[in-house]
Image (cartoon, rainbow, N blue to C red; front, side, top):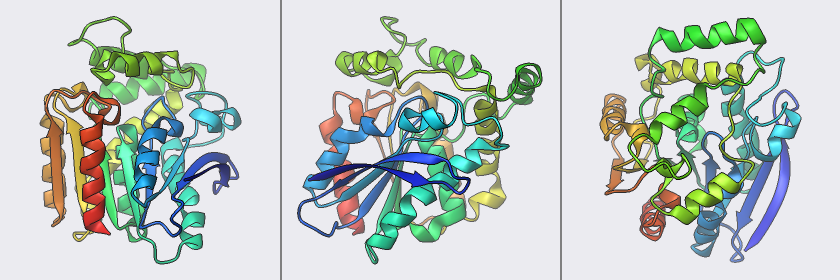
Length: 309
């Protein structure tokens, strides 16, 4: 396995940190591009990437604006820049800027996009804009919409924060949301909602690149674009022949007792997607790739990939 750290240049010149894992066997069976979740970074998928390379897949991950190693160039963790009008649109476009050079070097090799949590919403947005790039879509720890995103109170609050303090000022919107997710669980760290594996939770808490607040600008862009993604006119842009797989924990508070997963499945059926599969892992919480049953999850996702390529 060959592991490489690099940089990709976004449309506006921002440098996006990238990570690639390539199998020693040579030409990958397919490339899996990973879009990580909110307040984390691409290297948290190293274990899964190494698992996939052992099965002949190449893996490409990156740090979104305001995340990981990319954050230094955008104003710090949770900040996506002072002069950007819609950071969400930029982050979705960044996924293409990261993937295109790898596609160019690997003509004919299928590309599958895997998005986790916030990254799953970015991935859904991506397929509405750039579906021709992809041979499949995996959504992990996903949900139809961000809790609160559909109500005007959320946008009005964030708009007030921006009017008073600017787009780059940090907001407590995301920390308060994360804190509410932990209500059903023990409160040892406040992040028990992520996994039943206490060691994995402790690793997250100890990582300075995780668990940070978002700027008001980024939070508002996320809320607004959830509405764009769920607009029926945009749902209709998802290709009917795109294979889609959804993998979630049944005890993930983000999906509100699976309600937001069932609604998402209905959206894909509305779009006419014919190759739609899903699995709910009983008892698992939000980060299924860091759960106590992660070996089962890795095996299932690999088997799904094997069927596509």
